[in-house]
Length: 150
Image (cartoon, rainbow, N blue to C red; front, side, top):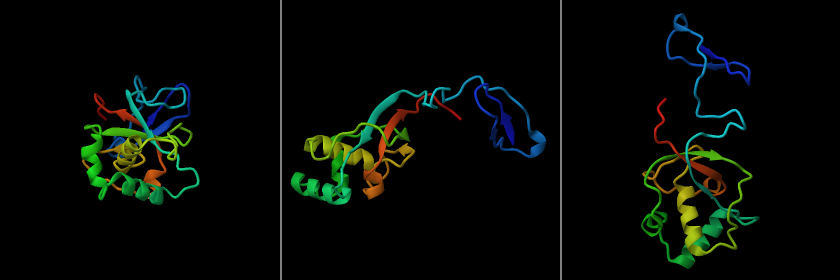
């Protein structure tokens, strides 16, 4: 277990990947997090989410699909052209997102597709489009992870 000491917070304990005989103390010189609010240091790509109000997200999306002539969520890939690279996600419940009843169909379909391709922590354009109440209810910031290696 490696103990990392930061000037602003209590020590963090990290798994060093080896037996306890290989423990060491090492100061951090760089981090993907800054000291003010733990915001990611990756370039922000976009904000994803929809405000359904009191409506059931699945029923609202089903009505949207009927109105837009979408038979299968996978059809949205061709219509909306999602970002091609994987991204890290950060869920923030207070993010301002479009209201479902006020947004246009094109924007709604794009947001639904992106939400279906995200988990709370990762956007993967290769995964199947999964639409659940949980996925549709997320409010996420997507960050490009280029140039980071851990």
